[in-house]
Length: 140
Image (cartoon, rainbow, N blue to C red):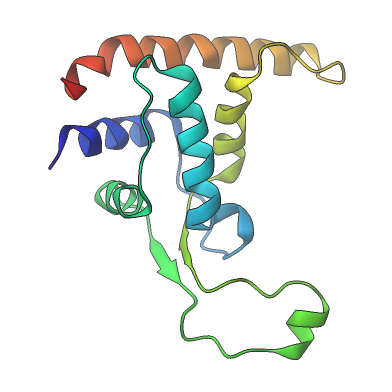
């Protein structure tokens, strides 16, 4: 296993949790890859970019369920309701934790955030920094 994959597995173990098995656009591989890559580019000194294959492998090794919708038939009703999902992979991750992790990328807090949210994001930012300092040696 590559050092980059080990680092990604550690990141998943540290900050994410397993969620439901529902397939939606929030837990698609495209969305998860975009969010993980945005965090890794902005929060870590080394600008890491993970491929879909690396992300799928890291989640699989951490015991997450990776599913797809390749065998589903086209449905006009879903198409008209705008609920038709693209043919892709899905991971049973709690998307709220992933979204909270991406909030650490913001330079300052939004005006409509409660004090609890501000404190959560500040503490999460500190945890991400500590995570980088403790695990950056894996990438050497």
